[in-house]
Image (tube, rainbow, N blue to C red):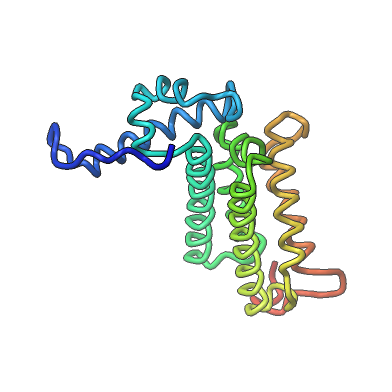
Length: 226
């Protein structure tokens, strides 16, 4: 397929073409979350099956996407956006309440973990289905992972400026930590880790604080408080 089919224009049923397009796209993504994130999975789903699950036609599919890989790419970004929005909202609230580092980190990771693990299909999309599909999707996966690394680095720098964390370049450590986050949450949701989600979050916070406050270094800001 050289490209998508031409989009209809004008109003129909009181809705604009853009509104109808957004609704169709959302229905395809909702169906993809079910089929890719549960059964049969991305590799065993066809355009016809996805269209049927969405209650739309294959023609309408090609008006929105070129390939199923495009759908997976959009869904992967959407799932990551949901998690990022949850983490940023928690961070904004923690800053507004002027919470110290340990409490900020706990609030952020509790919000992130709750969002990612709220639906096992989201974890499968993020950590399973996206792997090994194509160089393009691998680049996208790593780019989104880099955004989480940047997030950790920015918060580490902010904590260091407040005297709550040791001042240094945290990029390598943040990259390793994000790998731990992804692996632990995946294994926990799969039932391979016998713990509550709160225990998982507490372990992640302990790991992060161990990175930010190495042995022999003590907080300088907020009166030395944690």
